[in-house]
Length: 210
Image (cartoon, rainbow, N blue to C red; front, top):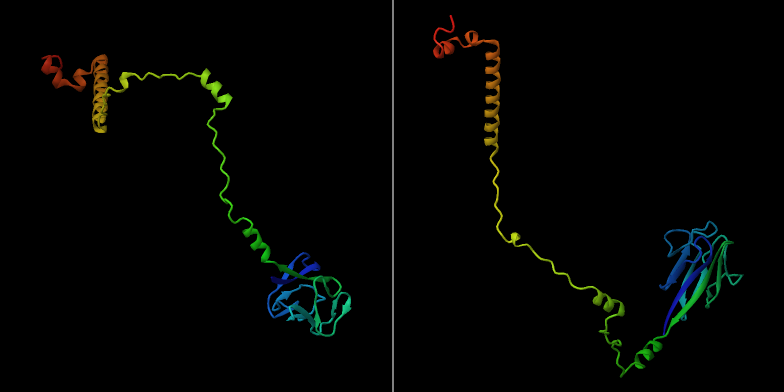
């Protein structure tokens, strides 16, 4: 048998909180250095202590200002505790002393009852039947064959792009041709051969320009 001891806060700063008693001597009070800290102004800095005695715990008041009550009675000496005893610290904080016993024999009995039995989980047979809904769909839907064109298997011709500098030369050449044509059109329209190109004009047409 395993026995554990704890305090259950029935009322106080943190109702419902549990404090486990696991040492031979456990101190309780408002000061953070205590094993059990109760943040209640009516609890003294070193209010009480718990001592393990005779298979249980006993509580002792350490000269607190408001005193310590066990089941409504003020204690002045070391007081042994029993399961269910109510400890009051001031007017607002009350703790319940609880004793819990864990039986090991019950766990052993559970394992003995299953000896010789097949402990493997039951395996259910896997059904190979096709649900009616799916079988109906299989009858209605027929497979569709997709023909693939033979052209996909033929190698495709890779077109190579011209370098950038080739495009630049082509564009500049085109611009020069256009500008030359425009210049010749203007010269011809205004008859500026002898003004702008007298030597060339006389070479092709002797005596055309003075």
